[in-house]
Image (cartoon, rainbow, N blue to C red; front, top):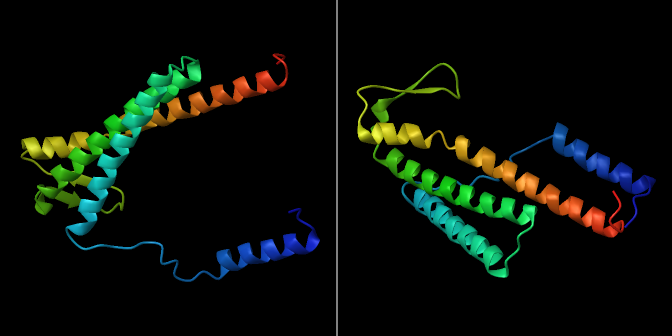
Length: 159
């Protein structure tokens, strides 16, 4: 479907209406304790299994290109991140709410001493960005490698 002048005006009108006259999106469904956590934890486990299968399938077919190796590394790192997040959610369940101090800044919370094993575990699991940022970088580099291979193949090997 090609966009002509009337379609573009209609599309811009819809976007403008959504941006300047918003109402409730109703996009968040909040579950009370403990069902929301159960479903979230099951999602982490399912994602670990799915990544494990994807990793196994890449190795089974014996793809050895750079992009495939990076995609395998992405699978491993994301599975580790999911496991860390799973453990962090469990540690959060057993964390006393009085152990956290909410500061004036919305995004800043302090963990109060004395530090127990559970508090330390909770803190370490909050450093999950040290795993998922490199994982997403591996995904990006792998997909870029696939793209470059496809472009060089479609142009007859010329770049």
